[in-house]
Image (cartoon, rainbow, N blue to C red):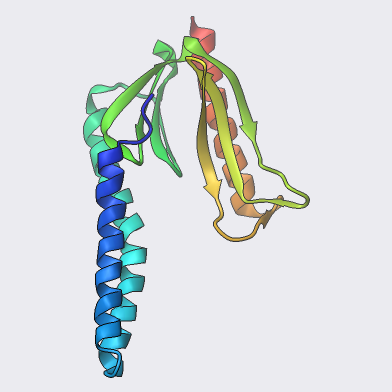
Length: 179
């Protein structure tokens, strides 16, 4: 299972870095003009905010297009991809965030080690995921990722992420029971 298309990731992140560097150079070059420096700083923030939004829009569009030919009962959008489940046929499919041009199918009968991980550390968590093993490779499906700090285990976002991870695991187990 290929989660990352290196060329796609390099194009997005490389383009973002080059644009930020260009805006930074422009801002330093025009440092005497406060308006231009301010506009440059605003541009840097805008690029940093817009890139993930545009990546998610492209992922949604490509995933919907690719999933037309995959009959599915449930669809889950997670932090790192979009999953489609067809437990009646014991199959699942995924379109990864960093590889949105390929719908990868999973035979649920070959999946082992299905579990939910809440990432508990002391009184909180910064990451929640569903985990399974496919062809000897551990696959993590992130349902919550906090970039700074932790959220309490009773926080509604954490409870929702744990519920979503549990649902993903249950769909995999339901598909395994079919065979």
